[in-house]
Image (cartoon, rainbow, N blue to C red):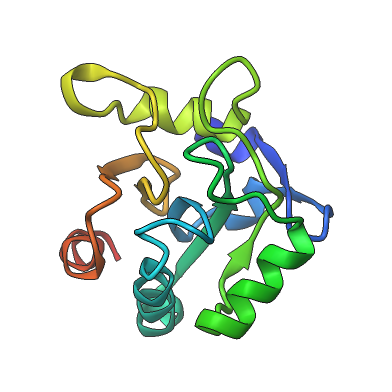
Length: 159
């Protein structure tokens, strides 16, 4: 069993969620922000979710305020923004850190399993995306600029 499934996180309402609940699903895990140049990608993420959820895709959004303080709101404000602006129906989680000593165990795992350019593990900016197959293996890391078409071509290979 993948180490991923031993990790617990808190959803946006602060309920504990064991990632083992997602065993057998394809995951797209993203650090998101409401006031970023990439924020319109919420639309892409929602589109992918709607198109592929019946084939086992789950999109997991993790708000993060580490890049340019672009996610300063409360969980309630973030959820409201996502609902009203992008009609997000995929699962949103508690605000986390993705880098540094307080980085979420989930993102420590993702970064270790799929380093970035030149082997660096740090997340460079908002909307870095990790694609995880049904066995819990990280198969691809996408840069913040990578949109729906780049993700969809890789997603189709593993669904």
